[in-house]
Length: 189
Image (cartoon, rainbow, N blue to C red; front, side, top):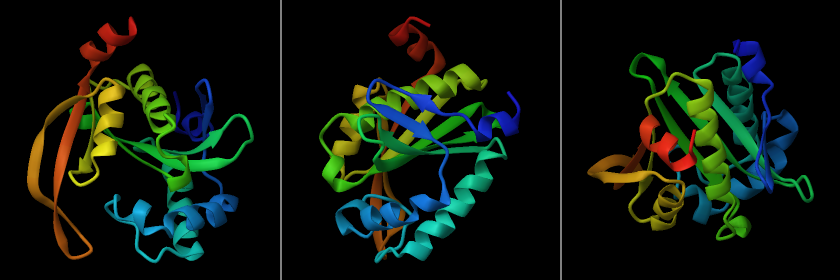
């Protein structure tokens, strides 16, 4: 698949649409990310988070879709077309590895949306790219994200202590991964 084809791919699950980011997503993304409960779980977004931060993220995400190394998506609910979060797959082709990152607006937590989107993105990663591994990590003080990864079939692989700095504080990171052969067994591919 060419990079230009990748730039326009839309993925669908039972309740969700994972689509290319658009600049008009900035107001909602800004509103969701300007919540410290969301932002503190993520590595890079500033807090407070302004609409200009959302526009800068979206410009980078739109450009990245055409490179073939990062596949960012906004997550919408099918029932009403409402943007509820974001998910991305970063590719490291030389190691045949992908890494997932995601967030949802706080009002959409605990509804199974993150797991549903993660399962779809894992399928997409293994089906479209020559990956042998997809991984993700979360701050250890955000165990809900680890439960999402487990529900999506990922295996807990350990904690790296003080692996990241966030808001000038060291953060431990829990790592999860799924190998192609595990995915094939789980999903009968």
